[in-house]
Image (tube, rainbow, N blue to C red):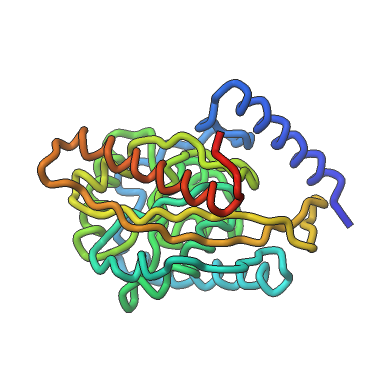
Length: 276
């Protein structure tokens, strides 16, 4: 039985998606978030150096696994097929992972399916927006703050710590998930225009990009708002490497264009239609 309040809110979000799509506002948030409290320098142990941070990370990851695996058992999260994982396992160094952003669970989908490409004792790091770090309460707050998350911040000094952490993590071989579409659009199937940040990191720190495109099909299950749960088809596409002969800005643009092309090709092959 669908929850009427959740269904009404979902319908408002879908209406906003349709409105923003018409207006070409593809990177704007469609969810209504409270303003974020700016994260201050020193608030985040980005590379998990402190013993207390390591304990909190273990707890947060355990909570996250339990939460999402319970969704899988209840068929509220359905990973139907993984394609091209060899493209990820071939990347032995640190890398930026990009994925289309369509659901709160897509970061776990990437983590669960990319695990064969992760080194022993490594987790998938996830870049998140500031409000996700500051605004949640309860168990979700623990996961957002400590499950290998890398929050952005409006504070420039904090962002210097963020940049340093990205460089450190890539240098030690970690994989970092970034959503280059920026905002999450619920179950939106088309690739959206990309922002350059993920590709600038890859170009600046000489790291490859592993593009992931998740295709969706309606399953026979419904969620708590009465909408079909999507069966997910996870496509790992060929890695994109920086060209050492190009400038930072040129590499950033080239890698972003190639990511967009690979996503478009994957979309058209999966759905059997041209991306318009």
